[in-house]
Length: 115
Length: 111
Image 1: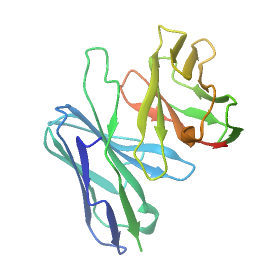
Image 2: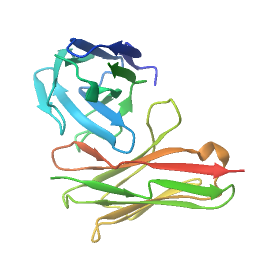
Image 3: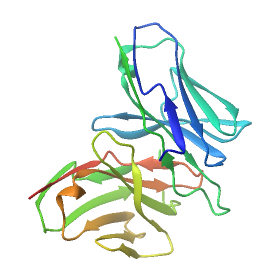
Image 4: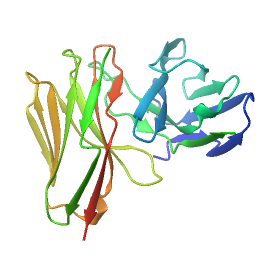
């Protein structure tokens, strides 16, 4: 979905470096998410934000931090990258419908390699 | 904690056959169950979803069934085609509004 973008698309870095992955959306959604995808493990939630002032940890938040700079922007940081953070990272957005947030729209993904 | 188990992890079928992927969830408060398809090198995209007040939903060749008592839900694809080849993820949403994903099923449809 072209309305959710991620930068960079690919990144190779070294152990100990600080890395920031950025996500932007033009869908006007209030909710944003960061997932990590590893082979055989599916999509695991790192952090999520239901609005600009709301940040919540997901199931695997250790070693990561986030910033919701605006409704349309949600960044994921690795303060000191380690090799087991090598993965495909997806940002997603959804809208509150009054009964919950339904469809999540994913960005194209960022492939991160930590050497 | 909340968990979604998905089986099988891989599934190979002949073109034209049916494919069934099954998921089990642990949170009895879950009320929304989407299925996502991820083609090779692409992002996951929603293909069908079902809410807890419905037992079955169909959309052309795909259908989803939900058994709330057993906490099972399944994806059914009929008349499979090579373009159905992808990884499929089930998910369940609980009261905290987070989606918990299954580990994925790699479906291969052979011509």
